[in-house]
Image 1 (cartoon, rainbow, N blue to C red):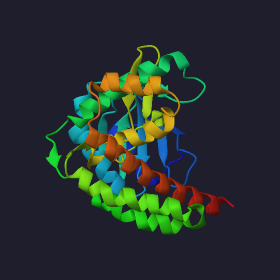
Image 2 (image 1 turned 90 degrees about the vertical axis):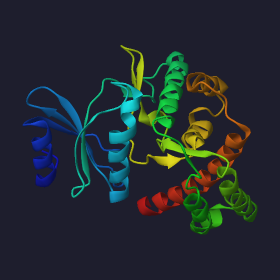
Image 3 (image 1 turned 180 degrees about the vertical axis):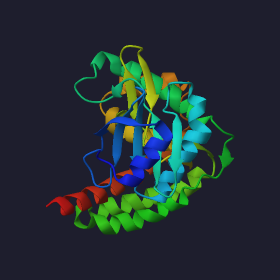
Image 4 (image 1 turned 135 degrees about the vertical axis):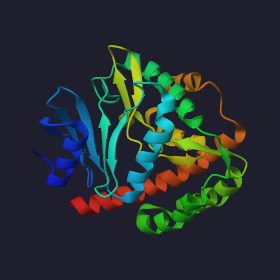
Length: 270
């Protein structure tokens, strides 16, 4: 076994006797994920969250919002233990939708279905007014400081510009359930059934719908407008002018956060 006794006991209680445990953690600090095969032949994933914040959000998403995606379009929560910060979820067929095993010809369909699923997620509960973007904007100055010399003065002022305007733009938009880390590494593609599922909801929370487009717009879609168009086809509508503005603001703040994170990671590994 590759899990400690507490996690093993939780897994056996929720899934029954285990036949195999395989470490599936991401190669980064704090990632703790295992694939479990039960003695009865069922497959599950065990995940231990880094913080109560992540645990609460993932459990909430699986209980309240993921069921709106249709059976097989997201894992099902089998059990949760807040003391261990652990969840056991069902395994789905398919592989992560990035890497050489993904055919370029399949990518538009993957992004079309991702758009369809995110639209369902964003409609999973009644939208509320004034999403909580204040926390995101307030952390901009902290990230600018931590990025240090990696940011020019001009870049820092540009970040401050977007941070100052995000709350005003957000006032005109509703808060909806969001995934929080929508990108191909959290899309599961099954080439046999040609179906996409969403995974990894630990950053899910109410927010602006375009929160889920930031890492796609400046990641998988960069230089590939066909994937952007396929996503919006699945999403079922174009973005409003306010959403386009909010997307630019959020992208700037996400960029400075990524710069700070990269600097911290490089420092730890040097």
